[in-house]
Each structure stands twice: as C-alpha cells, then as structure tokens.
Length: 213
Image 1 (cartoon, rainbow, N blue to C red):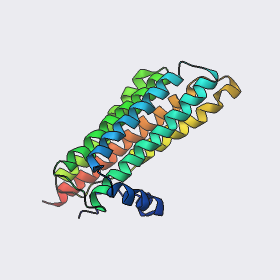
Image 2: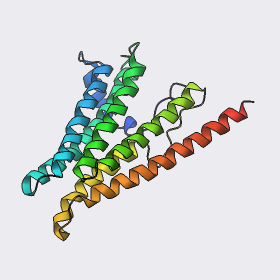
Image 3: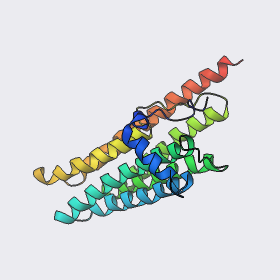
Image 4: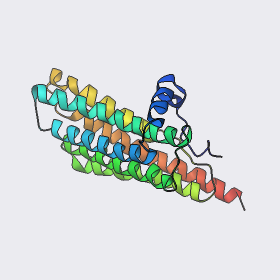
C-alpha cells in the first residue's frame, strides 16, 4: 500500500536519482529539509517569472531561464525528499506534513508568479486555486480509504512541465513582437486541465465511496 500512496514517477528508477539519493543519505540533510528547499526553489521560480514580465532583452532571457530552471529544481526536491525518506530510511514522524504542505505552497508561488509575469494576476491565482483543488481531492480520497488518485491531465508534474515549456517558449516571443501571451495561454491550459482533473478525481472518489455500500 505504501507504493500506492506514492506518485508513480519514472525518474525514481533512474541511475542519477539513485546516485543523488545515496549522496544525500550520507549527509545530515533530512527529507523534511529537502521539502522545505522546494518552497525556496518555487519562490525563486515564481519571482523570476514575475519579473520577466516587466523586463526586456538579456535580463528577460535570464529571468525566463531562471524561472524554468528553478521550476524543475522544485520538482527535483519533490523527487528526492521521498526517495531519501523511503529508499534511504530517513522517515520522520512529521514527514507526511512536509510531503504535502510545501507542494501546495510551491504551486501557489510559481503559478501566481507566472500570472503576474503574464500581466494577468487573476489567471495565476485561478491556476493556483485549481492546482490546490486537485491535490485536495486526492487527499480527500486517501482520507476516505481510497488509493490516492494521481491522474491528470494536469497533475503536479504536468503543471510544472507546462510552466517550464511556457517559460522557454516565451523566449521566442520577440520574434513576432509578442509579450507574455504564451504564459497566459499556459495558465489557461492549467486552469482548464486542473478543473477537469479535479472533477475526474472527484467522480472516481464518489464511485469508490458508493461501491463500499
């Protein structure tokens, strides 16, 4: 059941992930500290995306690359905290809290930052709300005795992939005199995809609960 409670990730079975886990396991770094670091990475990513929307030239390029890179570093922290906890045997009593809480904070920081960077704060906040909602439905299912539902189309890895791609594609906007439209489109996709995902997970949970009676 423990495996069912973990998000299925192909990267967890890679050599580089196992190597990083072994390195971290030999240090005093704890899984909870790695989880906390994910919020720092997300804050840097969100701030970079925000500021990219107000700059031009080389500074904008650097900020967009920073936003994309730290978005991925956030995901790397999300991968390694669980691997160090489970594979390296460093579980803590409060690990469940630090496994979930920083993820929600990180989602908000990155998506809201992208919204301000796109010049449409409401889109960023809406994307953050639906991102948190998808996680809420999953955790509601877990609390109800169902196997956690990590389905998409806009689960956490999908959202972060979309933001990363959006930041990188935004580098091309000067070619057609564009300005932040790509991030706005990405945020709309995240909103619609996350809303669908939340409804999909909710329907599966209701089916599970009704099947118990």
